[in-house]
Length: 195
Ligand code: FES
Image 1 (tube, rainbow, N blue to C red):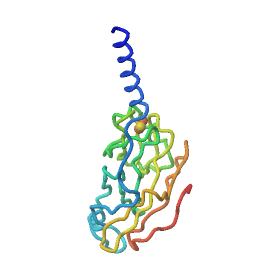
Image 2: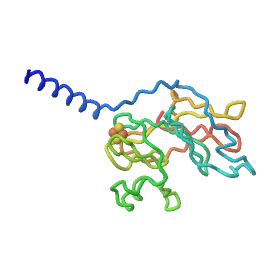
Image 3: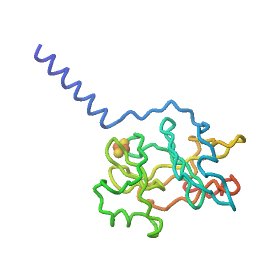
């Protein structure tokens, strides 16, 4: 009886360890989906080729994608942590509380001081942190998260194709990808990276 209980406890412990090592990461979301938010909602309208009142980031957690608008245009990050596949959460200050001195975070990647924006993603499973260009800078994640294709639908929403990468980087590659969906034309600039 005692042996059975011990075996059961070990099995339970083993399952817990496996859960830690391989957290639930599956998503039933289709590769290609239409966002519930529109181009107009992200940009606030376009005046003189620029977004008038940009929202900057809208995250669709169920589909595991964040859509980001910066000065260069729009891109979509696939929220699959490169460690063991959890879904990182978008946070407005990814450096504070990460255990990394701000100077260390500042030195990670190729960024001017003006580009040091604090928002990004924090992984809830084992604490990896990513800058807003999806470069990993803390925790066990071995490389940046990937960017996927995004386009504007005829009715003014977004089509995100999680099956088509437009930027993918290996370990230690901190190069900010240049791919963007241009606000002025609603077309891609074609500057893929690593695909
Ligand atoms: S899955 Fe381990 S840090 Fe994200």
